[in-house]
Length: 264
Ligand SMILES: Nc1ncnc2c1ncn2[C@@H]1O[C@H](COP(=O)(O)OP(=O)(O)OP(=O)(O)O)[C@@H](O)[C@H]1O
Ligand SMILES: [Mg+2]
Image (cartoon, rainbow, N blue to C red; front, top):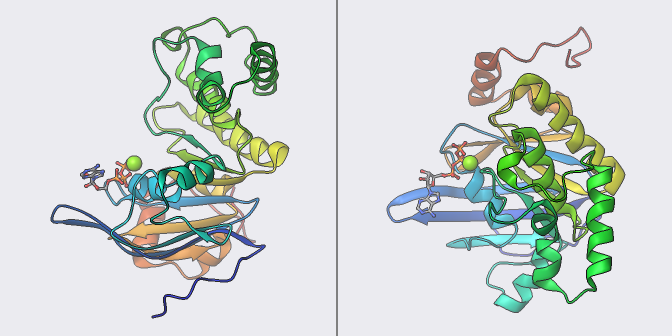
């Protein structure tokens, strides 16, 4: 094993090396090795409690590991001071697992929050950016509404708008379709793909949902017992499935393939 940094790479935007994290006696991440491909939709799958959310929080410096490295555009973000980590964090937008909208703020205030928190911008500019983004995400007319007045699917899109407002290079989604019906799930899947295409971002998506995973993933990594046990394109994963992955796919029953191995 070597501690040498991987060379700055055009292809890989984030590279995680030998990452360990414990909470008390619980060793959650046990030597994670993970590569996130620039401009692609990268999906992380794994069972409940395996450490997916913990891993994702490390990617943007919201948690610090016990040991290991996280290279973002070639820069190791582990151990950076608050100012430096703040700069790195501006590359990221995150759509959190549990509705992370502020209930006491309306839609405009929620979406504008990263801008008002980080910069001194004229109100007119903030409003025009927020309106433009809500329009692009198919959310006109909701500006003055509060989160409680929106459907679950609309709340997800508002959360996405907030994650996008500061024009991140990397978007992290933690189980964006949990709690949505199949049609709303498909809509969110399409939104993730369209966002990747329209905004040119690198997407990292945590998912439980195998059908979604194979529908939208360019690369898939499986987290199991604290390590990434399989990773690659959907076809690569299915060609050589790790037993844990095979079980995951088979029990989901949601994925069927045509003769060429494409997802039906
Ligand atoms: N801040 C924390 N303090 C202590 N333990 C934590 C903390 N965050 C997570 N854990 C523990 O780490 C383990 C992994 O949690 P994590 O939230 O990453 O799971 P997950 O894979 O995202 O699961 P799910 O699919 O249910 O969201 C869990 O056992 C959890 O209790
Ligand atoms: Mg989670």
